[in-house]
Amino acid sequence: MKTHILFILSILLALPAAAQNKRVYLNPGHGSWGPDDRPLPTIPYPMLSTTGRPDTCGFYESNTNLWKALECGVRLKKNGHFTVKFSRVKNGPYPYRKGASNEFRYNRSLSEISAEVDTWGADMFLSIHSNAASEGSLINYPLFLYRGYDSQESAAGSKAMAQAIWPRLTEAMHAGFEVMTYYKTSTNIRGDIDFYHSSWTNDRGITGYLGVLHHLTPGFLSEGYFHTYQPARHRALNQDWCRQEGIRYYRGIIDYFGVNDEKLGCIMGQLHDRIQKSSSLEYFNACPDTPDEYMPANGVLVRLKNSDGEVVSTYVTDQNYNGIFVFNDLEPGRYFIEMKADGYVTRKGRVNSTTVKADATAYKTIEMFRGNSTPFDDEVGIEIPASTPREESSDAVYDLSGRRLPDGPLPRGIYIRNGKRVIIE
Image (cartoon, rainbow, N blue to C red; front, side, top):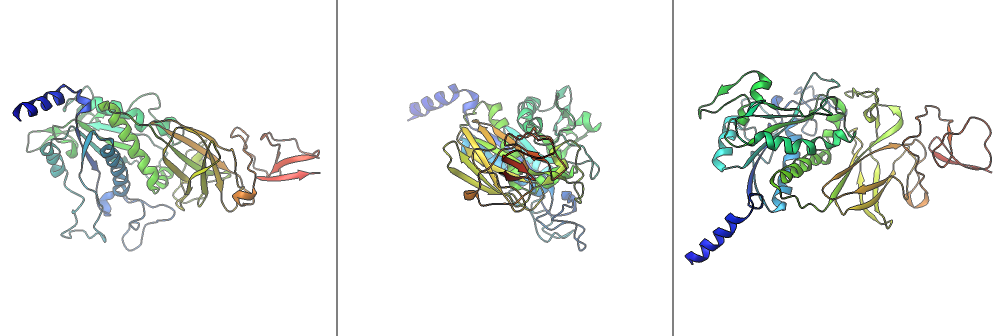
């Protein structure tokens, strides 16, 4: 028996480090619906006069952090090479009462969390957050912070982990799907001591600035975006949008540990009005010359078809002014995206072609055309190229290729006016 055990151990030790089980500690930042969870107003969930905060469906960073971390953790476990521990898996309590005995039930102290990371024997630590500037600011970009200095991390390996995950985390911004105002050609990976120009030493003799990083385990804290950029905050009300960030962390982690064998991909899209601006919306200060400048489309029925014309999934965009739709875990290949909503032209058939690749998300921004909605089964959809110039006039006429025609009488044919088919006989 002893010989048999030694033989097994020798095999395990001979395996590459990446193939052995790794322990990842995930910290979804914050953990209640209190004033320290950075609650902010959105269109559907304004601040309540009774609390000065939105209800629990509104924007709290604690909610969004948890959705991201849970998705990342579930996928790490499914991968088979990881054991995962969360600093919390719930939010609360509700209603929040300052000074109540259960006030910190899930919003645990940072010293407690940092000590637990080392006690558990983690191989990697990731703290998930979002950032803040002045409310309504047009600033949006990620930030990774590890313990130490820009030139030297205090826990060896922390900087390399951050560098491996940065390209994954930023891909939606680099794709133009989300606004990225800085660091488009560089990284924003910093040591916390240099970033904050300060440090302190805890009772275990560990020096740094961020309390949650006061441990010996390599890792970092991620500020994935600025929730003070109001269109991003409305996207964060959509759990699937948040989970996509969790998937990007997951992909970066398996890249770093060399156990990436992902065979499926995803599609994440956003729908917005082609003409109507979003400037009339409250809590929606948007960057100019971006899709955020146009009204998000609520309540759109989205159908996903494969190359054989079969409907493989459906999604309805929420009422939270983000226009987000997501299709996860798709076989690689070509897909088509159909849309139907009141007040918009139904678009059906081989339209909005999207190619899904393994271990990747395809990002799709689609314009919605004002007009009469018709049932999917009765309408032959027409794809109008995204390169077609925006036209404020409802009298503009396009041919079926999407080219705008000069004003004046039209010859016999089929045209598009105000998002609807027009037949001239």
